[in-house]
Length: 300
Image (cartoon, rainbow, N blue to C red; front, side, top):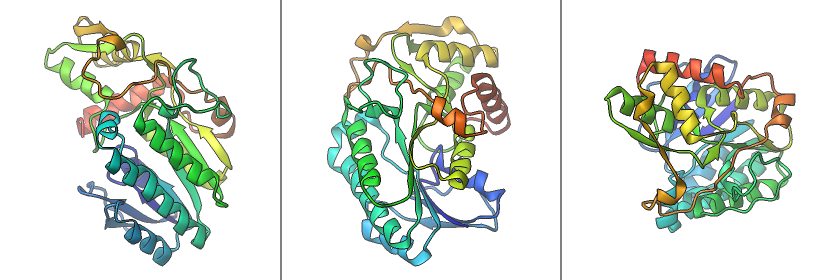
């Protein structure tokens, strides 16, 4: 099976590539700037900026992958709010081109989306709940979803939440907590914002499983609902770091934010748990794996 992965240098994408390397796949891994140190005979690395949509389409038409995993996105929530044109080009126009080319070659498409398509007014959102994003990032990802859903492709939209773990890409909350507390520096963690923290390693395994099962439609794949403060405390406990350095913060105090955040964007994952064997929801396992990888590899 030939698989094309976008965002292969990201926190999630590089884990997807690593996961697929252990299987019988021909992998085409697209990265933008920095190529991860991941080597394997069944991986071909292609440097490509997704804003060059014609090049993206040309590559898919040339390679004719059986599966496309679209994990690339501009995920800086405040950045999307400020740089709306760029956010649109990456999150919407690139997705439109990937959908268009995938239709021609009849590839199965896995589109990685976000809990931020919801407004956060109730939490534990099901796949059938109506999205209502409160920021531009969430809006662009929702439009990307609609491009996929309204095509005649075979697809799975995978919504996830607060991805963390060891690896390249932007800073994530778990590594931030360990790095700061290890230096004896205090941090603020929100007690009134709830998410479903999701380990990149287990999410990648779940996506590999989805590639084989090909469940049509939307699937929520994420960890257990908790607020940012409780998650920071769990991480500190695991690493034996001083919890007293974790200070309670509240969303109203985040005056530096350019974009609104949902108050509770946690996801109901009962559908995915009934379909998949990967224990992506197990917070104890997730944190144990995270600690092992962090201690072995560092923060990435």
